[in-house]
Image (spheres, rainbow, N blue to C red):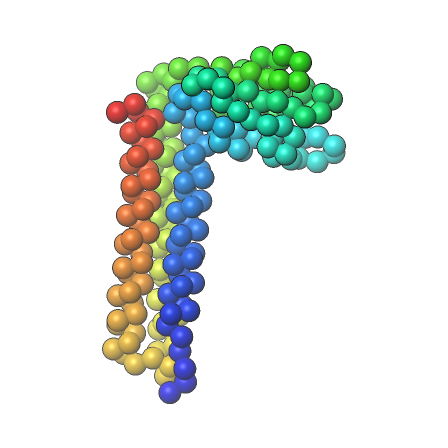
Length: 189
């Protein structure tokens, strides 16, 4: 029998599932909860120097107060571009310009907006679950192919499929926990 490295397969699947969970966590961090959070501006892209750049590459973002963000633009000539990009990002924020600093008061979330954001959090979680299940499917297909080539016995195949399912269950539990936590935060419960 040719050598089959089950640990390498499991490590790869675990890494890919962890990537899906981390992606979800970064998506959830960008959802507004009514409190000032610097990650709220992570998706903002600013068109400066003839290219689109992430906001954090042209300015420093801080949260000086619980309901206020401050954006300190490094180059005075980019202040208007940064202000325009924040308005265009669809975050519902209206920057107040004070020289090279933009103040962003965080408005209260309406009940309707909270429900929309909670739905969005649920959608992000479902995308992550789908990604995890796709990783599981890829892993199981790889195991079956190895079994067909004679690199794995049927007993090993069943055991490894069980291991893959355990990894999947663990990753989906992490997704569910992150989504539930974010929904509670958004809905203020």
